[in-house]
Length: 122
Image (spheres, helix red, strand yellow):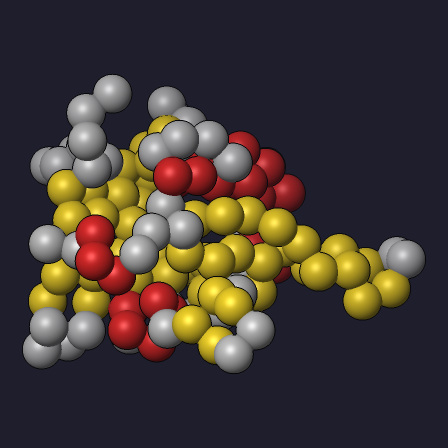
């Protein structure tokens, strides 16, 4: 697998991560700040976009920030399954750590946090 290409736009505070540059993709909004670009037919990630990247990468007093994957609730069950599968495998799992928050015994909310340090951006 080739190394991802990282491009950071300081003016807009946006980090673009390309796993397969130039490939056509469908965009899936995972959160208001994280967009996954994927090839649905091949069930693979093409890239990711992180809006307000400095906020996403900023640590808190208790550790890294985590974000609920609110966009998953808007997807069909089939597409949600594809997206969750992609999120759990490299190259996406090298960038995002997938976890969950369980506020009650009957409810599980998928969450994520950035695994890469801001120094990795180019």
